Length: 182
Ligand code: SF4
Ligand code: SF4
Image (cartoon, rainbow, N blue to C red; front, side, top):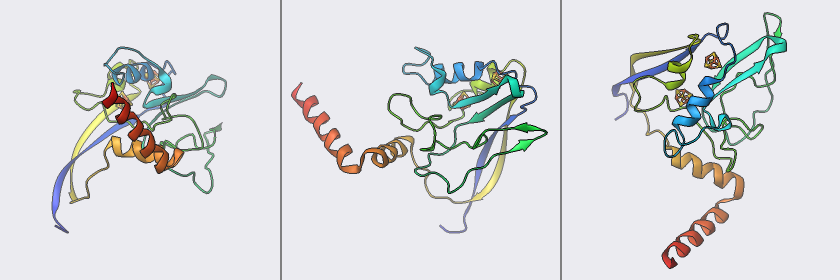
């Protein structure tokens, strides 16, 4: 019902980029935890946290995978902070068509940080031995919101954007036919 309030747990990972040394342990543990089955492999290209690492410019910036973006922005941000020049879109968390990060390297499917659902504490936070990452939870009252989109739905939307809905439907139909036949 409109106007109804409900309690929501807001999860935050605070990033202290000054403490980050660019070891990328967070990328390794994230990709291992999300491998299927869990911990069967690791590949930082599939991590939901990526560390922008440029030692020559003294830049070590962990960035978390956020929402899937079907289209690029009309313009791009580029920041200079305390004399350090960051690359275009450096702070952006979107799985966006303009770049390869936050996408499965084989399929291009979008990746999104799920705060390591089911774990007591996010694993990247646990394995960041210099405490550049800190996990915080707080409760907030919010308006009743629409159901969040499931990962599967977002993945299908991304594939449909890339290949067209007809191709996806045809491929799924072919797959189910060949499964039935096997
Ligand atoms: S584990 Fe911590 S120090 Fe290492 S790259 Fe990740 S955020 Fe930086
Ligand atoms: S919280 Fe979990 S899913 Fe998110 S980046 Fe860290 S390890 Fe990956």
